[in-house]
Length: 167
Image 1: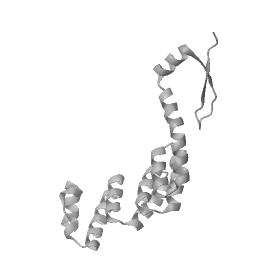
Image 2: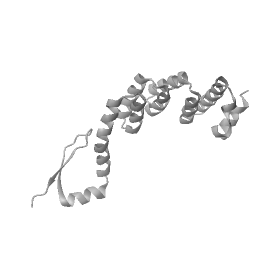
Image 3: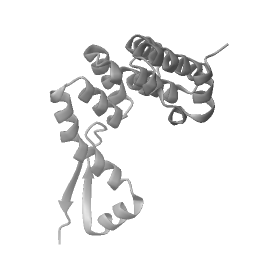
Image 4: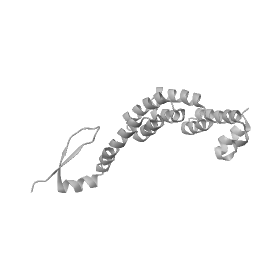
């Protein structure tokens, strides 16, 4: 039989109970039980959030490693963020970048205090945003009427060189 508070949290949400009256070990045990049940129900994001509140670093690390083995890099990153495990965070950030999840990569690098990679992502952010804006067909058609484009097919940088049309 589960603790009645665990059942209440599962039915009504974490905000339905006040756990501040419990000591730290009881609070952690209840939240860990809730997180485990949510995980078994495949409610992974909610489970990770609950375990982060419980500060259950060991279980978050275990789950993160399991998600990595299943190629679920975003879920792995969510697990590793509260752990502050720099090696795991940097590794998952690389995988997030490779899958083009730049926001999650930035969060992982930030949690790992990797200032070099954070600044690199920020420098590349403008190039990435420009490439996505130029994917808008209408904008490209308008530009084509006035400009002659030379496109260098470089996927990583998305370089678009513009040459003025000769008169």
